[in-house]
Image (tube, one colour):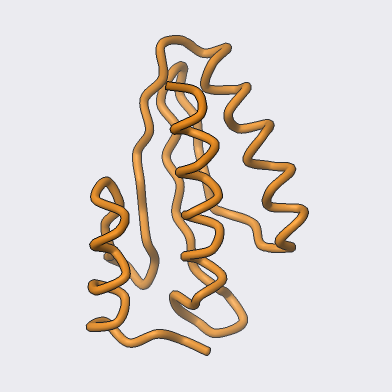
Length: 95
């Protein structure tokens, strides 16, 4: 079920690096180098498969941009926040 803007903004309080715009939640993650970035992407990919929810993402050298929305709902749902939480756990484990 698609979440309304107020609910999304409240949930984002737990994710200070994430922003809501263009009907999705977004984050830009920076790593020490390409290898570390790609390693995080690989671990995130396994989590995406486990949750059966896949991001729009792009990578340039050590920067990973991720956008999450639920296409079936045409907006942000709890699935996006579940994946954001998994991504945060993976990235924090790298630090």
